Amino acid sequence: MERSRRSLRNAAIGFSLLACFLLFVTAASWAGIGKFNPTTGKFDFIVSIQFAASDAQIDAVKARFIAASKVFHTATRGNHQFGRITICNNSMATGYADFLIFDTRCAKSRATPGGYGIRFVNEDEPKVPVYDSSPEDVMNRVKLYWDRIEDSERGHFTIAHEFSHLVYDIRDEYEGPGDVPSECPGNATACLMDSYYTRPSSGTFITDDCGRYVREIPTLIQFCDTTNHDPLKNNYQNETHSGKSCWEVVSTQTRFPLTGVKPLVGPTFLDATNERRIVILLDRSGSMLPENNIGAEDRLTAAKDAATEFINALPDTDGWGNIYQIGAVSFANTANGEVALENVTATKQTTTTTVIVNIPGGGATGMGLGIAEALSQMPADFACPEIFILLSDGQHNHGVHPDSLIHEMLSRGVIVYTIGIGSEADRTILKALADTTGGMYIPVNVSEMPIPFTSKHLLTAAPAQDFPRENEATIRLRLALQRAFTELFRIVEGGGYIVNKFDNMKAKL
Image (cartoon, helix red, strand yellow):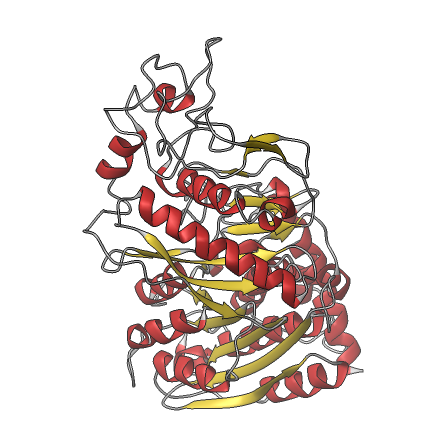
């Protein structure tokens, strides 16, 4: 009977939450989580193959990116190159990748100029990205098509060309708003942003597998400068950058500084498994208990409820057959590995829920201890993606500092989503963990969460034998945390950004 009462209460809350959440979603673009190391001049990023590629096809992808790094290194005059490239197969990590590779052939590759590392288009909007039909609708990344990977003579030029758009915001030199043909003057090596498929006009030409008349071997491996830039100034590079050549833009931009010539030594590759690994990190410190809060809200119970609803909503596999795994850690003066990281099954969900519901509270806030314990749960191999969801209501005040663990998380490719409960939450640390790893920080302000009619009814009008009574602050907090976890569920299910549909979480609510 108690279970059915609880289900009725959660259903009432859930449907009200769903209505609120529909108003919260916005169509903001979501970029990859690529990084840049100014010391080495290397770009680390994820490549997501949008189909189930064979080992031979993955080898072809690697070969094209190795060759593309060489072209990119040459074009940047030895300053920049590719670093660690994580290969995610079968549509894994779509929302975190800076390159998407589709099995479509003979389509035009494209990139969002200047979109590298800009996770959200508008930082002031709610950070909930949406696409309506396919991952190709989402910008701030490079889209490649399989014929470019198959083309061992020209495909790597496409990768370097499109990546240069994405990183430096430089534009095409081969076309523009004018009627007169746009191009750099005759030059055997410049410009990479010109049509490396057809220029220079001398040399041997062939018809490729897509029916395009192209140079047999491209030679445009440099960015144009003031000596060989388009003199007519009628291309998109001139229009966007007030007549500046590509090299003038690249050499003066400050987001990815040119810090000196480095030898070409990469890239390296990280082959990830087709699993979605998720670990919940739950703050069980004393401040999470009702007796330690002015509003007497039971933060720990509300967090447990929201976390277990999230866990029970997870499917065993995604739409491409990739496996979900779930684990749980709690932290206070010590960190406990509450639930080992294992495949999601109905039995696993039941046992995990039981364990989480019975976690006791009390003690300090050892946030770093919790992260270290979660990292220790990770297997030796790597998954696409590995996600930590960390909830806390206080300031880190015990044990190893979370900052000291960021490097290890980055080396594994862990993405951290953080939820800060109340005004006392350590926003600085929680936001830094999320921003640095490519996740998202979600502040939960209980006072701003309205209580729907059904939940107010639970407070004031419901007979004790039908519904358990809770104080208003606890109900507000549960609603806010459910909204946060619903948002995270949709991001996880969407592979890093939101699919514009309601699935399991809607059904569970």
